[in-house]
Amino acid sequence: MPANPGKYHISQRANQLSPSGIRKFFDLLASIEGVISLGVGEPDFATPWHISEAAIYSLEKGMTMYTSNSGMPELRQELSSHLRNNFSLEYDPASELLITVGVSEALDLAMRALINPGDEVIIPDPCYVAYGSCVILAEGVPVMVPTHQENNFELNAEDVEARITPKTRAILIGYPANPTGAVMSREHLSQIAEVARRHGLMVISDEIYAKLVYGVEHTSVASLPGMKENTVLLGGFSKAYAMTGWRIGYAAAPREIIAAMTKIHQYTMMCVPTMAQYAAIEALKSGEDDVAEMVEDYNRRRLVIVKGLCEIGLSCFEPKGAFYAFPSIKSTGMTSEEFAERLLTEEKVAVVPGSAFGQCGEGYVRCCYATSLAEIEESLSRMKRFIAKYG
Image 1: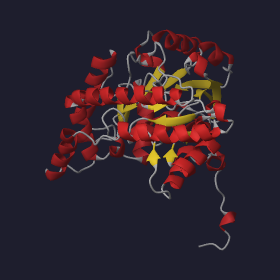
Image 2: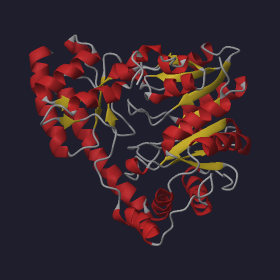
Image 3: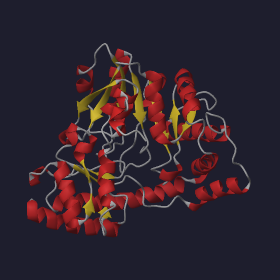
Image 4: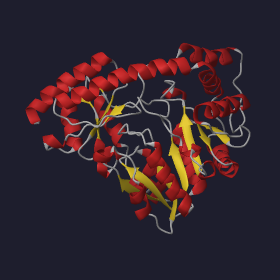
């Protein structure tokens, strides 16, 4: 062990990255007993048993070898059918689909396959914490576009176009959105697509929450006219099928892009764990009833938490997708980080500061309602006391 570790030459890219604002709070949470967590974006449901059983069966039968780098052919065939049946999208399972270690790897691969040093990527603000960091790791430049509660946190096409320069390479979006729960209307998404087509830009679309919508329809960017060849579609199994720990996602894109992503994947991950792929096959074949039950339950919780937050004095945009509420805490006069820290230490309720998701997240906190109704109601009671004290 060197006496002076400060002499290590850490890369500029690594030094540019900020630690995850989400994980910081969960390191703190672990040291406090009796905390109700509205923080981590993870379903509180166990993976449906028939999905787990498929993985167990594969282990019992000794199916534990490497698979194709791209993923098992049967899984890619099932995924192709899934995308056709749900979003009217046609992808060749042999050349236009790649199975990845979660959507996080798919996002990283897409950035590294498409971005050259200095290329700019337009991203809505607030957004999922990994978006800007993945652009930086690919030596690109994140260009943030503000979104606002009064516009339902939807990305505005005029705002996007105003930030396009000769260096702009792509638009990276994620709807239904983390942290806001916003869902882009087909009309507004079509406007973004038109901007992308007109300027020759790729759209990288993270649609991990595509099946978690409430009273609205999700439109996949790739399904819009002329957009399949200009879109890298990212998705996965973590959220809808309660499979976060299985770490399995996918990318769907034109074959040239998938080929480039696959080369990087070969030298980093090689392939997704075999048993997780068998679980994913079962999820696609027989998991839709499970998804419907979970969505129905999330919707009940959504209505309770939004109503409760408004009643205690925190104005809250009504989320139409994912499983997050994003209330404004501006009335308290605190920063989002100060609010989250005090709420955690004083009332033992964990939320994530909105500032973790970008500058436009300041003045908000993210509350995940993928937890039981009883815990949501208790957390609202504790937050009511907190707001009465500081609001």
